[in-house]
Image (tube, rainbow, N blue to C red):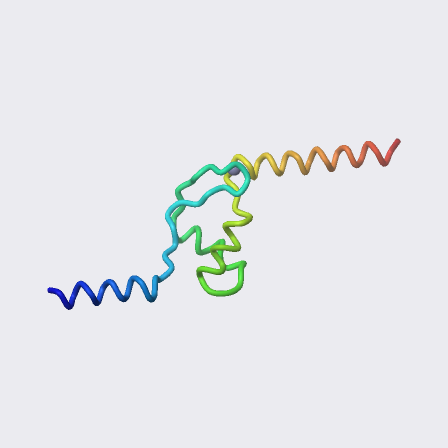
Length: 88
Ligand SMILES: [Zn+2]
């Protein structure tokens, strides 16, 4: 029993394997959203490095649906403003 305990402790301390979270935090509004690993993995394909590195990169830019919609709307507005400025 004593041996088993020390073994698991060493493993936990020396090598903590990276586990994908089941929740992602929006980098814009901080909302937490549940995410399935298959969905998350598909998004991580676009990044390079180890799983952990990919996830960290993704987490920096990750946005929730509300923010994505917001960003899209702002982009369209900016596009329209640009057009009106040009025609002036
Ligand atoms: Zn958000």
